[in-house]
Length: 349
Image (cartoon, rainbow, N blue to C red):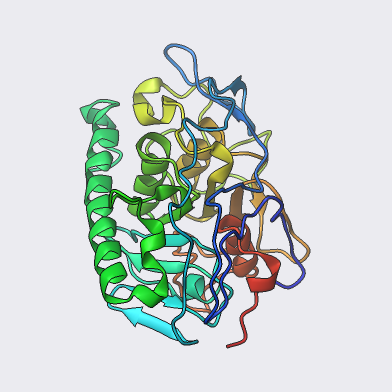
């Protein structure tokens, strides 16, 4: 589905690339094609967000907080060529491996994603939870705190699964994503979720841990500033799909926090006919996702920035929907969002 589309993959790190039966080490460094470093966070009382783009420089310059954690041992994969699936996790050693792990948390719990493993990721599903959301009537802080408890569930599951896989399948390189003390080495992990999980993923990357990628499918959304479906056929910065001067009471407080993960590693995919479209677009704008929103389901789309939308599909799982439902060029948008190198974008096995 990616023909006729230019994807911005500049800066993608494929460190630790391993072809089946070969051994190589990775640096654990990560970069993104996004270039923005600003946020639309507000002054007192109202958000002040009136158009696309950001208006206030983040305290951290958009580069996140802290540093990536490098691997303490090289990525070593000697398993025979093939797709190796173990319950809710797997790796395809026919691909040139990226030294990256994708954790899908789905809506409330995720699954192994063959699309990602065929393009070089180790992949696993993990649970998150089902907090009431955005639940702003309970206060601005409640939903973020609840989502962080969801992420605690995710983290515990990922650690347990990685530990078990590293012990039981040592030729597949699962231990590469653990620190020497047995904790998860999130710097080489992409987290992705759908709908409710899309926002929990964004919260985890913003105020939880520093990650390689955060990819939200039909999300993120913890505000009620949107006007519903798109008021225009395509995104119009002069008439954005959110209220001007949205009250802070309608915006979860986690969206005001500086991001631990560099903001150019966050991506969102959304449909204009999604009733949550306005809320989702406001969230990405307010928290400083780089670049203007870009429509990806058109021939010749140039996929720059980190905000991608489709005029078809609605509230869709852009990673797991059936091919006949998936908008044109979804693969191209996902390639950019997940940092897939060009050589891995069209697997033929």
